[in-house]
Length: 252
Ligand code: NAD
Ligand code: ZN
Image (cartoon, rainbow, N blue to C red; front, side, top):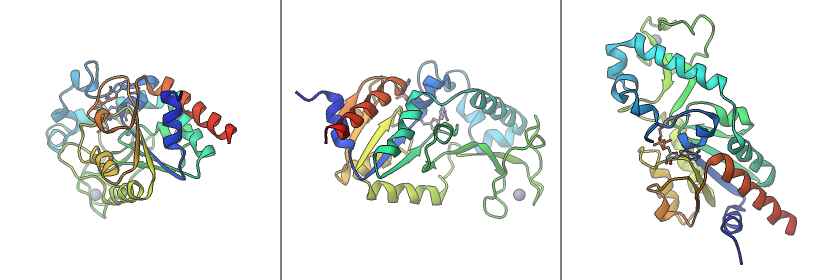
């Protein structure tokens, strides 16, 4: 009899796979999720730290909060789950990661095609979006405890992340839609499915008949539409799934 892992491996053994990830992906790297009981929002009010209004009210506090998160992220390491996702590229012709995370851990683990829906803590941009959105990579000068003025217009710089009430970067969003339309299967890891429009990509995939496999230790909004749910953490379940795919290929 086929195990759940083997069934998941069969469904994901496709020419073009999308891996859709959320904060749970990085939990095993020691980075907190947002909405879980012990998550970031249990300690900080989102409207204070992740909204344009919060930044206008207190740019310095928001800047420092992101500096602190960036420091934690730089001190963290990709976990076995990120590494297994990167290793999928050795097995399948095309793998695209679409992530809600802003930590850059997929790239550090070696994933080559990563779409960051919510931006990155490793870039800054002008808070007035002058000149389109030229992004600035952190330098010792930019990494001060005060936001520096934009080099072009003098408005304050801010982290290049998507805050509540803001639109997703159009190019990245359009690329994500194209990937979802073109792929045959989606592996969803560590997302509650509550953040829109990101989560709608999963429903879009379902509506287009793509295979869906989900890894999450807790129930989510996506459970009901996934063909296989692998209950477990990213760091334990993703390598197990990779091993099942390797075994499948070896048997061919
Ligand atoms: P969320 O906090 O809403 O949900 C996290 C999910 O992860 C939950 O379903 C939970 O059951 C699951 N989870 C917890 N531990 C896990 C583990 N070890 N392995 C796998 N799954 C686990 O997060 P979300 O759905 O990603 O919400 C999106 C928002 O959170 C985004 O805006 C994203 O930018 C932001 N965020 C990013 C980071 C990061 O970059 N590391 C961290 C926190 C939040
Ligand atoms: Zn500017």
